Length: 629
Image (tube, rainbow, N blue to C red; front, side, top):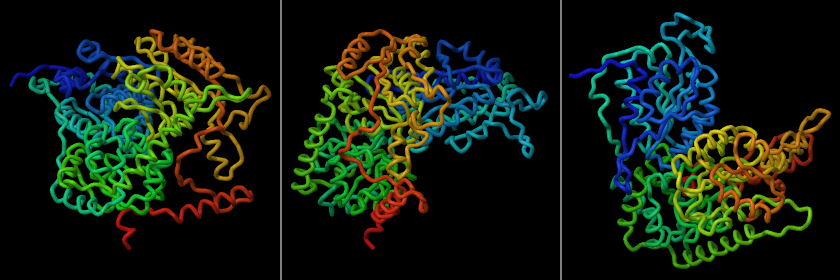
């Protein structure tokens, strides 16, 4: 066997550069890893840094400004690639490594692949305690990287170079497996990074990764078909798994063949074109009137590729009349249904169900009602997003701004990708953003991570450089994490960033009051302040300081004009606009369980508690078979 002597770091980088994937449309062979984000420190600069420099042509290295942000960008890249391609991230030991914890949790919750390569303390322990080392008084093996264990799908610490021979294939399996997919952490002690080993050359041979589709078991199909055949009022909910399985056409064919209206989750939005006659819009807490009205009356819900998060189920109080059939490649998620589970790839599962169902269709009156409600919802969206002229002294709301952004390009439903994550905007965008292209709507709402937006937009642009990427976020998210504006300028990756400034955390301020609380510590005006009060933040000036074009506008008309300039610009362009945090889209929505204090000296809280207890009576915490009792 031929062998080659390399350091552990050199072997790692060479192995990653040898991983390939075939583009399913063009047939072109592409690197599985689009690159690696790196912020160097003493824990990775000498070992892994030297290896990355050596292989920089095969595995590009991108420098960012914040470890959490660069990991978020890597995760967004994988999401935009429908998990077919991904990126790696390396940090030094200490704070660089712990900055990855939030991003790892985000990837874990959203079932998205990212390879995390934090530096680690010396295995030799010769210089202990090394700079930034956490000393556990009861465990000499602990390091801060152990924080990443519960938020990683696979975790390993490489204490001898040759451990990569088993660790890397395992890592690749998790990263490319539809059911296991999530963050992988390989902790790299800095002395081991520099150690050499005689590696078998075959280890570095090009490896082509196929994304295998799990076919359904016949008995699963038969059980599900029995449940579906009894249905007269079915609804299909499309989740993120439908998009990752590239099952959009399968969802459309199933809906049309069997007369089943379709609702979507945040992760699944865009599975079915917004204008399709059976497209009900979003389901649940951020849902449309059409979707939620039919879901409340459905007798069967076919949940495809969704983990049935509380926002989708209305905290298990929305579709309590329905039997639930789950179709999911992940067994953990498939079990959430309660009535019938099909453990399979979304596309193969839908095709098998459709074939077995034959000519079965939902009631004609149900289909007609679904189409009527869907059309009425589209009219509601038009009414909200078409408002341009507001009364004097009235600030625009999020829905009016969303309308202006979509109107700013005649073909925006095909060309634009909107990116968002937290605050009021996820609800407004899920209801009001229109896309007829899978991937045209990029929302991180599994973890709802404030600060994801700009870094996520950068990752999306890296994955889809030909598309216009529009990041929409509030002032709160902007202030949390904005430095990757400078990275986008440095890399020549243009973003359009729209900052909606309501001077605080408007979403939680409304939730606080809905739970009977007094406005407190959310809006800047309601916070503890010094003598000079809260600052007036000039977001446009801040963005210009990082190299972006930027301007502040005062009306919908000015926003529309600024968007013309932004689209014509060649690099990142930020537009800030003041908004009204009190006005939101009243149509649609469903109950969401947020626990209200059982005892309070405030009348408003006691009243909210009574409403809370009444709402909980509709809740069915164990969905599925329990309704047969």
